[in-house]
Length: 368
Length: 110
Image (cartoon, rainbow over all chains, first blue to last red; front, side, top):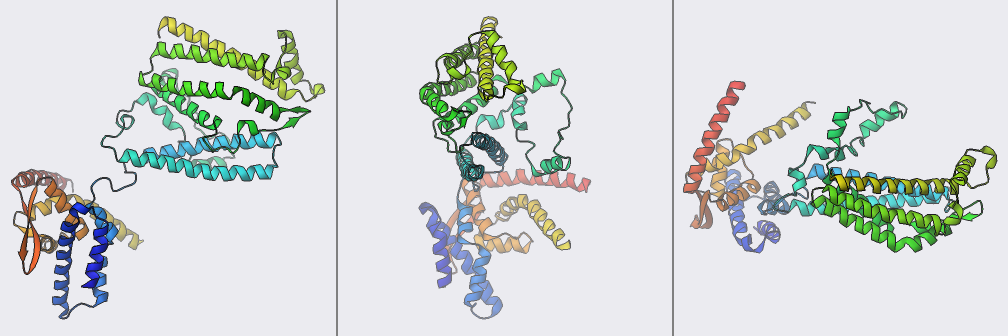
């Protein structure tokens, strides 16, 4: 009998206090009933081994007690599981890209030995992966235990499904096939017609959410709260043809830390507001103008006043063209290529921001 | 291969039977029973259920108002007796009709 009581105590320990006594009494009666039947069949009292075998048949105390618990029996249930898989896949993909870019920057700027950089990238990839999976699981665990599942699970829209093509190709089979074909574009290139493309565009609200997530990740990385990439912006050091880009970069980061932090935080808040308003066109346009102006100002600062300015500033359009042309001149290998490329990027980005502001002004007026 | 086949059959069979368990329990409890006697009675007609499935199920059905229960002493032991409540009877009638309909249409397909 001691075996049975030991077993029942183990079950009782897993049960809520309020129902413990009741359940254990019923279970005890059942087990004793089974033992009596066994005794009748054997014609003698069952041995300890036989009793233990019978208890094993009843089930492990953890399993038996779990069946009585109300609420979900799974960490993440079957309804939520595909979402969990998607989130983990996407998270790992983004993290992998960030780490790879970080690795490339470190190797190219000769801030660390390639071997060391690769080793650190792998280490951060691993810890980052564990963090991503852990955070996604935690969110899934909480969602699983909500009375009502979030709207995005039930009230999805076909418009937003483009988001889910992301990571859709990331499975072993596709990659194996791709490798077998020699890494060439194995994507079946059935170009969607204009009508299809239009309907496949994300709805404004979904775009706002994607944008908020993107800026959120950037913000976390910039402020060092996201330990995904082993590089911090100011840690990228590198001296190229006598110019210490690492020092310039760290000066820029020091000067721009708070403006960029504020910009990213404001962008996240704005995107979320935009999503909540269902992607209001005029609100979006106003935001685009504001953020475009801020970004344009930042680029102007880079151009005229930042520590980078002496390297990229050119007084006239003619000088600009001349510098671009020298980029393609094999004789002029003076090491100024990086500066020239940066110059082009800054000008290009400035033009893009101005264009964005103009288009937003148009939408603000037309309201569409 | 044949062992795999057996395993597959067993899991599909369990899945197939799972839905009918509630019906079997409700139907057996037209007559008052306690847990163990209910399990034995179900086993005799070929519906075998583990304790860890049956007891939580009984509790759930009771909390849904389909069963009534009371503790009584019998054969020198306290036992919890279950019986179909009026609400349970109505529910059983509806579920039985559903079962017969499903069974009839499946029979035609098979």
